Structures are given as C-alpha cells and as structure tokens.
Image 1 (cartoon, rainbow, N blue to C red):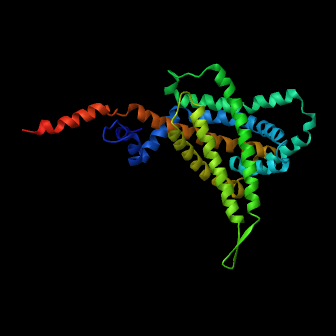
Image 2 (image 1 turned 45 degrees about the horizontal axis):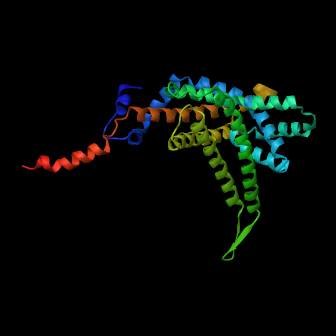
Image 3 (image 1 turned 30 degrees about the vertical axis):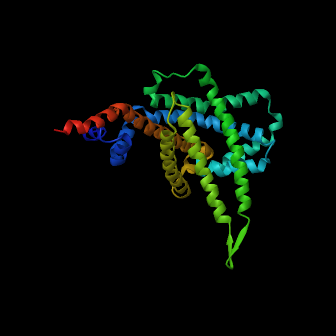
Length: 320
C-alpha cells in the first residue's frame, strides 16, 4: 500500500471506519488485496480447493444416501445438479453422472467405506478453518479454540449442509411445481415459469450468502459481528457471480481444455472452479479482517457521562 493509501485509513476521529471505506473504496480495496497477498491467499486457496475436490463427491454421496429415505432420489439429484452448476460451471452433469453411478451400486457400500467418506467429506472444512485462522491471526492470541471444537466443527458443518440440502430440495420442488401454473389477467395468459426460474435463482443466491455468512461467523477464532460477516459474504458472492458467468462463457466458446487434458478434463475444470471459488471466499474473509483492524485502531468515543458533563458545563464557561 502506498503512503497516500495508508494515510486515507489512518485513525480519524471525525469519521467511522465504515465512512472511511465508503469515502475511499479504492484505497480500501487496495488494502484488502495487499493483506491477501501478505497472507499468501492464493496458496491457501489452492490447499482449500485441493481438499474440496477430495471432499465434494463423498459429501454429496453421504447426503443423498441419508436424504433418500425422505425425498425421492431423482429430486435430490436434480437439485444437486442445478446448484452444482453454480460451483463447477459446465461440469455439473459429469459430477451428477458419477454420483448416480455410485448410488446404483450402494448396496455394496460397507461401513468402512462410509466412515472413509465421512472423513474425506470433512477435510475441506478443516483446511478452510486453518486458512481463515491465518487471515484472522490478530484474534488467535487471546481467543484460541479448543481441540474438541476444532475436531467436531467440520462434521457439524457436514450435518448442517445435509439439512440445508433437504430444505432447498423441498423449496425448489415447490417452486418448480409453481412454474407449471399460469394466470389469466385481464384476458392475458401469463405463465409462471419465468417467475419460478427467478425464484430458484434467488434461492440459490440466498443459500450462498447464508452459507458464507455462517462460515465467516463460526469458523474463524473468536466472535464476529453478523453484519461484518454479511459484508464479506455479499462481497464474495457478487464476485463469484461475475466469475461464474465468465467461466460459463469461456468454457463454452474459447476453452480448449478438452483437447489438452482429454479424459482429465472434468477433474481439471472442477479443480480450477474450486480454486477460484476458494480464492473469493478467502478474499471475502480478508475484507472482514481489514475492516475489523480498522475498528480495532479507530479512536474510541468519549464516555457518555463525560460528554453530558461537558455539555452541561459548556454554557457556564461561556458566560461572563
């Protein structure tokens, strides 16, 4: 960061940190990028993406096996395929095909394999927690997390994701049924298909924001204000939406990845998408961390009783 940018974020008694960020967004963005580079964010994102690649299929398999007792399997796979396209653009069908092939032979799955999948499905969350600890290193000194909570946290997230998948599948099914209806309004025939599609998109967007907000609140050491977590989550989701649409366009028009990598195309594309997604998740965490540092170094307002006392004595000091 240049001296000019640093001076913009020097503690100022006349402005709150939020006002400073809104007044100088470019300087704050540069501060975030500088902190992200200092924390080796790309290296951390690569580690998160690698373990997410190992975790995604076991996590989906466990979720479908557990939820198939409540919801038909084809509805689960349809929901997974729809929203998996947000995470791995252009390769969601390949992942769902592999998932369906495994489920067709789930009768041969042993308890050992189930425990192995449970272990691998939690790896990404454990590595993500460690990466967030690097970004929020200013909290760790006084607020370390116990070893038991660090051990259980990834598995709690796996269970929460399964419950979230159940809820999303039920809501998505209801919205799809809504799209089959139409309205007759003043003699005009209006289909609810587009309205249903918009609601499905907003549902996915809302789910992304809720998931990232929960990650930013729970996983870093110490307690975080939900509003700050929401700020980081919205930043990461908006950046991912731009990146996702670019990836869809790139793989559909310009990419020659299938020619270069052949049968490894799916793995390479999924890994690339996961790394970009992990980078934006950690970048959102860096936004929160830098804003938190501004709050830590901001001038503290005077106590309320002192302010009232000064105000009460003000007129008497000006009197002759």
